[in-house]
Length: 445
Ligand code: HAM
Image (cartoon, rainbow, N blue to C red):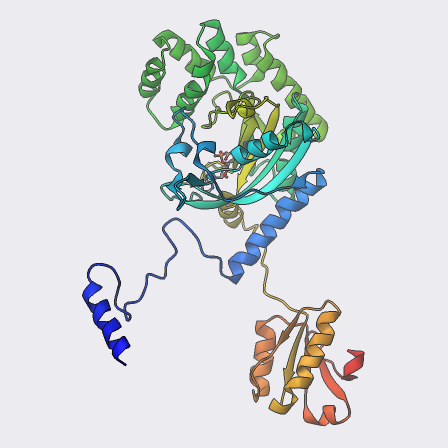
């Protein structure tokens, strides 16, 4: 028709500028750094999320969620963190600055603020959600990942840290990772705080100093010292901070800071509680753990694989002042984020990923096109009873195909609707495991 011709002509003219020609195949890969989940991947993800959920519930945590898209201001912090440079942010059609969330914690703080005094404390919440960071994709690091979070709002003592660490180690043990496979490095930012207070560094410099110190593994030492002096610290203070971070024993830290120091007291109590719970084997004190997010104020921790092949498995800590930075009243908060990517790499390396094949209870098939109605009736009956049923939608298939299909969908039983049986109001039920066959009245299925 004329219109089509015109459209074609128009499209042709635009070709080089905008629209690809109709025949041109699109790039079928998902955007760089993101993943598709085919059925096998999705089953594995469901298994993993079920493990996360089961652990959270066994600790009495309630599940929450927030939008993936948030107001940009929630994530903009001026401490020089990597995460704020990696935002998927843009202006929406209403001119509002928004961002895909790079993490869940700011949303949790927003919700706690919104509830205000109406929030019953302590609140113990868990969430599993997709996060977006414009990162350079490496093994276990992507531009989107799912994060399991457990957070406690309203408990100021390290009993809260001990509880969330217990959850992480319970998860590890549950999936077969022993303390010989993985560990959790623990420290406290109060170590740094003490050093900074002694030399009169202003409070607002604390976050940026922590971010700089966190780079000690990635940058040459002199670069870190340079960064610290740029924040107003003297070279001597910078060196003092860096040597305090070399400590690997709580006892040594006590010698350095004194037994009355808060970090020392917190860590001793925390390690004591870990003994009581029975997961102390997983914990390692390591003063160099500072973490790269500005809002942590006390204990910080990071899960790692003992072979050292992968990046952090999980990370978290205490953040008692985050609500205040959003203009609200501060609340003591503790929690962690646990990604879905590194753990799968690790479980795969260790041969600990479960095999989860596709499986249904029954496959129902009409051996004759006219009997498809009966097959539908049989399938509906079985589904009403809560069975998972794959109904074959094509007719006239050969028996060889039928049994191959039954294997493919992992059916434990095959319900065959054939002429001879149906004349007697029966269908044939074949048990795939025992190979036994039995004719059953459709109402008795
Ligand atoms: P985070 O250390 O930035 O902390 O991330 C926590 C975990 O999320 C990481 O240890 C890793 O497992 C996973 N993760 C982060 N970025 C990526 C990525 N690009 N690809 C794959 N996995 C990734 C936080 O996000 C804090 N909000 C955690 C927290 C909750 N602290 C207190 N409550």
